[in-house]
Length: 80
Image (cartoon, rainbow, N blue to C red):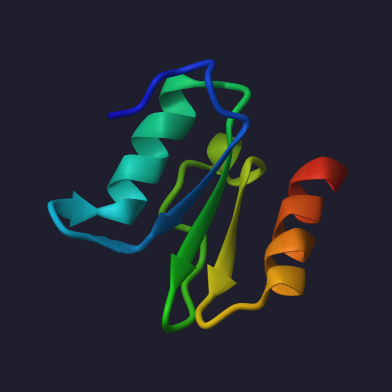
């Protein structure tokens, strides 16, 4: 469940137990124009699945990642 306006960032795995993390992230970004999304996966992925206007509010992060990697991804959100 996603509550628009509650969170500033979402870190989502590409593979969720009940569906696609990519689909969930796209829907959340459409619902909340202030949300920044980080899509995580064990293999390289891109944000090309998103409409161009949503790509500015998303990035990817390959697993395994370290705390500094996560901070860099979050920093990407702050600089865009």
